[in-house]
Length: 243
Image (cartoon, rainbow, N blue to C red):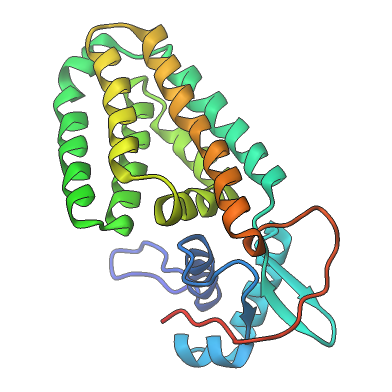
């Protein structure tokens, strides 16, 4: 059982904290696709025993984020374009449907907040801070759901898109300027502000589907990051680190 905070709220267990840290490391590409994972080294980095690390890797294997090969070891899964496609389908269905139900009163109250997020994103484009842009991107899309009173649906979106997030991270690093994404966000906000829900949905759908073009470009340049749909047995090389 997890401990509790002084206010009575639950704290994450050691296993859950370990799982969250390793999962985040995979999504943010600190642990690159195809990288070898060492239970001993991860445990040392995180200051925990091997047990929560082992349990976390087993759970991540169920999510398709880690592959375990007997007598070889554990590896970060390669990016599977089919999983990316499935995650994109879920995200597009929820976010675009939500935009068709935007509350005009919410727009008047919250349009300034959306513009503020865009301004903050422009600063990350100037500094090249991909991590901060990614955080603001999440905030932006969650705010879009809130316009229609569907912010709670973000949990469903977030749970579905781990594989998609890795592809999005690769696109920020290797192919797509941050400024292009900000311009796409601005198109969505502009349409919302002038009460054009159809235009907002079209702009959002185009924005969300841009990841497919990015995946193809990254795959052509760095095929070692992607699954080709055929089983393969990796060769253990340098062990990945969260540092």
